[in-house]
Structure formats: structure tokens, C-alpha cells
Length: 193
Image (tube, rainbow, N blue to C red; front, top):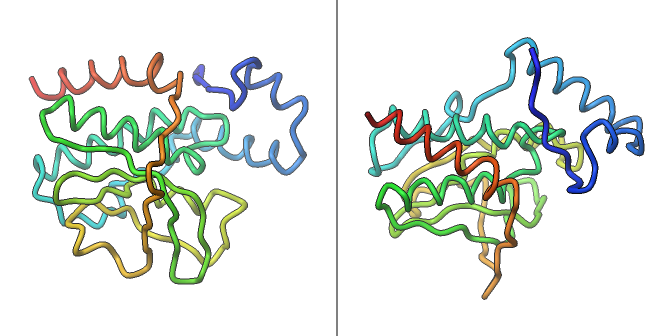
């Protein structure tokens, strides 16, 4: 089975990128590749804390799983793909007539770890549905395992705090615009038939 892999570098293929990678990075990629071949990659719907009033539960779960499968095509999986995940989810919701935007800011977790993160906001809700993939990121403390969340802003899980960066512009992403969004748009129209 041929896997589509998106390289982290725009000017190199995945295999070219790996020629310059650290042995630890190569080890991570080999694990992810094997999981993909075996159909063992996790989906955010498996652990989703769902408190949403938008759409219906079945479609919400299918949508975040589809978005996850697309950004998981990154050579290193989806653990560093919060921006692309949020962009695709926001594009989907706006396409379906639900106002949403990608928010860039600082996420701080109950163990004190913080990093720059992206999430989606609608008028009433926050969607942080790629959180389960943080376990795969070697930069993340091993005791940190936040569950994906989609629900009311007032019910954001207590294990995380989000602080938007004022006037932050989310950088454009060619993979989102040129590869994943056209495919996702077709998937949405076929799913909703």
C-alpha cells in the first residue's frame, strides 16, 4: 500500500528530508509509517470530550477524524499539525455556514507545560480536537495527555488554558490550501448527500 507523505520541507521529498534527520526523528517516522501500514493510527473521536451543539455528534466525530487523517499525512504524523488541523476544521465549518476562526496563542496545561498552539473558535464553542496527538511529540512531557475537546467555551477542560495572541495572523499553509482542503471539501459534500 502506497502512503502519501507530506514532507516538512517544501523543497524536499520525505525521503530526502530523512537523509538529514536525526536518528531519533528517523525512529519516530518508522514507527508512524508502520502504524499507518497496519491501520493502527489513532483518531481524535476515540477520546473526544463532546459538549457541542453544532451539527450532530456523528458528523462532528467523522469530520475531526477525516481532518486528522489528512494532517496525519505529515511525515511526523499530526502531533505538530495543530495549525493545519485548525485551519481545515475552520474551513469546513465556514463552508457549512457556521462562523468559525482559527485562533493562535499560548496553551498552558495543568503540569505547567506551555507552547504556541492553534484552536478553533465559533461564536459559542472552542474546538481543540487534535490534542490527543500531543503524546507522540517528543517535546511534550510524557505525563501530558489532554483529550480532544469540542464544546462550550465555558466547559473547556480544566487541564488547559488558552490565551489568544493579540492580532496574531495564522500563516498560510500551501498543503492546506492546495492538497487537503480541496479533498476535504469533496468529502464533506459526499458525506452530506
